[in-house]
Amino acid sequence: MASALFLSEDQFLCSICLDVFTEPVTIPCGHNFCKPCITKHWGDKNHCYCPLCNEKFNKGLKLCVNVSFREVVENFKKHRVISENGIEVKPGEVPCDFCLGKKFKAYKTCLECLASFCKRHLEPHQVVSAFSRHQLTDPAHNQKDKICKKHNRISDLFCKKDLTRVCVLCTEHKAHDTVPLEKEYNETKAQLEQKKLEVKAMIKERQKKAQEIKDLVDTKRKEKDEALANSAHAFSTLVAPIQRSLTELMSAIEQKQNAAERQGDVLVKELESEINVLHKSVTKLQQISCSEDQVQLITSFLSFPSTPLCTKNWSNVVISGQPYVDDLKKAIVTMEVTLAKELEEAGKEFRVCCSKILAEESDIVRKTECQVVDLETLPRGAKLDTIRQQYTVDMTFDPCTANDLLIFSKDLKEVQTSHIYWCGNEVPQKFNRYAYVLGKKGFSEGRFYYEVQAARKTGWDLGVVRGSMRWKKTHTLNPGNGVWILRLRNNTKYTALNHAAVKIPVARKAERVGVFVDYKKRSVSFYDVSTATLIHSFTGCAFNETIYPFFSPGPPEDGLNCAPLVLSPTKHSTEKLNEFFSLIAVVIALVLFWIF
Image (cartoon, rainbow, N blue to C red; front, side, top):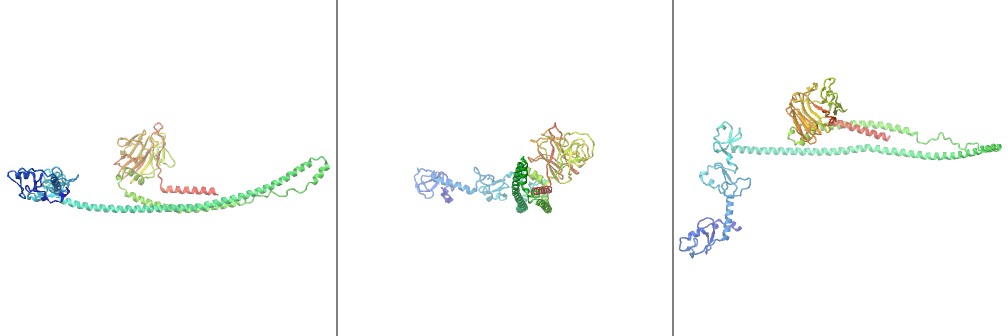
């Protein structure tokens, strides 16, 4: 049947109706005709003749449909329809409004007829003169939406002021700037393409910059690895001679000790030999003294040797090597002093070098911070991470603003109380009624962030206050008085102290609370650091002056809230560096002490 694709169209036309065969039959002469056509042609004739070759047949000739040829004709019809109409419509494409049954893809849309046509049904618009003034466009959906409902005309104009489609009869838009919609569309599309090119260029530029930054980071990483390797080598080079000297010193001391032990063994053996001789002399003298014969006693004693049996003087005998211990101690002390001076000089140079590196890195961080403008565009977790990295300050309590019953740690990072109410001496700059305390630092611009550990607390107050509140003895806690406070009570109940106390429903108590203040945007936000979720925010805050962090360890709550409120330690890098140097000095001192 595929051969039908290679036959001409004339071979499928009936010579009587001049149309494609319908129920084709083949007569004895071999010619094909539509069964209705040939039956009608022979109906009023006495003899049957072929319309093409005039061959004569009997009147009672039985006509049967050529089944095989009919299938070829049907296949031809199917492919002719597809070739005339084009491609079958797919989801999302504009269908022809005049195709019955199977829909074909529209080729054009008529703005006058408000309909879409495939190639076959578009022929009248291309042939009939009455349709020559119709405007054809590319296929489009929802043509009814392009008709002005008021005037029932095509909305082929665009109002730049109201940004809508209008027709020529829309008088309310005549004073506006209206242009042909097609022209505005083409111009906008050209601008859109230009904007796409500009955005692509920006993307390419930023990708290039990002790659440069990645390459710089890789270079820094390699420099870091090299610096660490060099530092490890330098310290190992420094430690190796000390270790070697320690080994040699211990070996020398062991050798001297062994020599002293050998010398001591010889002297002891010699002394023991003399002691044995003396013991024998004592025994002999004892025997002489026991004699009762006077003459025998005298003669026996006279025969005893008069010279000393052991003539060696042991009072000046000592083990050699002892006089050199003091000299060794003096040499070690001298070396210790020299080494301490050298370490001090090297430490100074090292601190200067590290300070320069830290200053350079801090400058880079500050520049990076200036580039971060809109925190709201960041995801939840990334937002809090960015805030912690860029805006964290090292916060401490200010005891001068505290209630006298508040107890502070030495580093002013912890505060706790045993009583919440207090009536005593009134001292300036102190809260005389409630156990509150302010932070040491005040802020009048920019952004700052600090964290408070409250895992063991069942109640607390956190927030910020205006600087003028430092001088007041009592306070009404609401923003109208310059106070923005988040309060926790009974371990689960949060309250935002606004003009009216607002209860805040939360699923769990925050064990570490982060407080972020944006002075410019006039906002105070409280975060649950462990889950990076926002607990509450005050917006539109009328700061108007320097503001200070505000803290209260909360009431005792039957002894369940006595744990301290702890500021998270965030010491500056140089302080940590100084601690590192101090640790190194202590370690070196211990090593030297152990050696000497």
